[in-house]
Image (cartoon, rainbow, N blue to C red):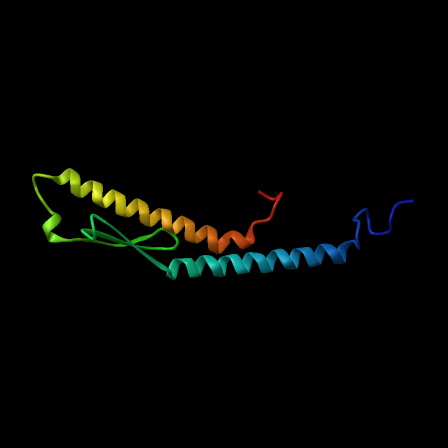
Amino acid sequence: MGNKYGGFPGGGFGNMQNILKQAQKMQADMEKKQAELATKEIETSAGGGAVVVKATGDKVIKEIIIQKDVVDPDDVEMLQDLILTAVNEALKQADSMAQQEMGQFSMPGLF
């Protein structure tokens, strides 16, 4: 006494088509949101503005600006630390932005 829809509960093939359409729409929406992230910019700095890093929401470093007075040949390590700090903060903010923007697409039980 099986059901006439081949074992698919809740309406059979028509329901599956609806689920596939919703999945395709979600995928298109995700791709659009990812493209938007690529256009959003983040700006971080270190050392009171001695080093400025500009990045996109999809974690592409677009520009690094270094003030001339922070360039000291006798203290290269400090400049390296400032650059690392600013870059890491930019990437952290990009991750945070992506989670905020893409969080609406999380599907419990799928990942």
